[in-house]
Length: 90
Image (tube, rainbow, N blue to C red; front, side):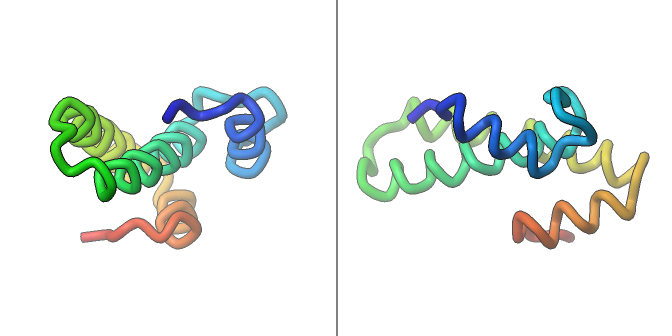
């Protein structure tokens, strides 16, 4: 269920501003999106896993807040991230 370090490095290299960038909103959104996809697949199989469902809702809320922040600060990067990760935009 947890993201492996190789997967995280791949996401950081793809979305990061520089090599060791793990704190920028773009990278955080991409990592959260990967975790959300993994949890969604898990919940399709395990329908009664309510604790994971609550964790999924927390992750979605956290990603939503980061997306709102990125939209306010850097709209062009926001649109790139939405298109790349195929996240629904209001």
